[in-house]
Length: 392
View 1 (tube, rainbow, N blue to C red):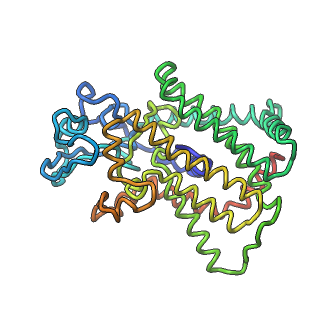
View 2: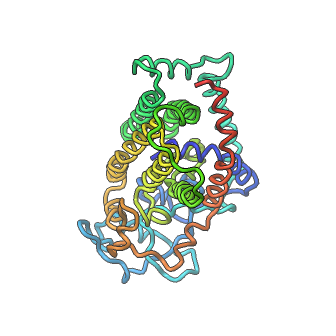
View 3: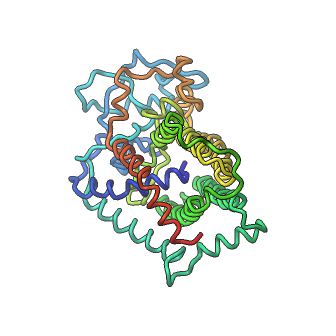
């Protein structure tokens, strides 16, 4: 699921994604036949985001093992078997077990379409401009000011720790609530319309929370004072923060789906960071919160981190429930091979990392994440100056 960390990273790398997208060629077709595909699985849909497409491979039936608590993938009645046997050989790679879920962060420049990126630029620009005018621009509705004032009035105090706790709680309820309602509402109004509604509600709330946090992070009660002259401590906390962004949920990279240019999908990720933990977003957010709380040490940061951690712990249950509802047996298979605790499935022998596992991170989206994360670190003073202009 999305989070404030995800919103921030998307904003940082947005311009770089545009540069990549605008210079790409027409998208190549998918090898699967949509008439034969399971419509519930985005792996087999021609509307799948270009970031997800990958060369299909045949399945080595002798290497497939049944997983606990579910039918064998080789069973003729198995959904997994039906999906895998539909795949056609289109690669010179040796036969291997085909993925049940999606390939995280897969990206091919040749599979991009110029018209989609033009639509993405126009749609994203319009939505951001409209939200800015409604939320904080001079001459606009200043709904952001009303949201902050209303939250503080509801809390009966302007204490920054209490305020950010309440603001993030409202964001969490709206964000997870709309995600939960997607299963029931999207079939009625359409996936694209629901994604637009989701963004229109989430983006302004996230902007308010981020701006208020940046402006008031060092206010409130000083719970402890972390030594600023310890280079080793600073390096360790910086490294923890850096690693946290490598744990972004793979759906963050699907910008064309986020902007509803391509039909949004509830993806079942199987490779990349998902091999380490089934809930990378939660793990990354917890790392980010612990690092920032340890470094700043104020009640405001501690309050914000508490809400974010609780929200993401809940998202583990919430996300699994939604994936189980959407993907059924395929999710149970991926769940049997993955874990919530990082590397737990690996050391228990349920997940075997490929010998070339590192290549699943040597992909365009992760290069942009690394560059964006480093840039965001050095851009902290500018972020603070920008947030101060909103007077929140």
